Image (tube, rainbow, N blue to C red):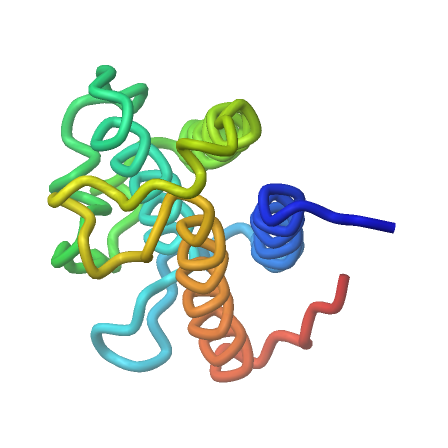
Length: 165
């Protein structure tokens, strides 16, 4: 069976999302902003951050408008700091809706790229992120996996059981 690089990228993006989604699904109410260690990235911030990252990549590469509500960059963007107060964030259900929606948009966009685009280098704004559009999916899956690892540690420190798919 011959599998394209694009198929591998899509599979990586789906796998990383399945793993993180499973951990988020197992997050008890009342623990969305729990920080067992000061400054740790809590579950709600992680969910919003990964949604923001997917959206930011799409905005950067397509020139389209952000699909996220105003203020998400300040709450969830690179360099933002997680707040321990649930009141500082949109409702968990809204963050989850955006988390799911931005990944679906990213998968649809990535799945629609042609071979010439996949082989092309990324624009200057994303140089250093990946060598090409094709390689970008691996970088994004790694990024999500990094945050899934953070959530794994946070869950352990909160006394929650591990989550396996």
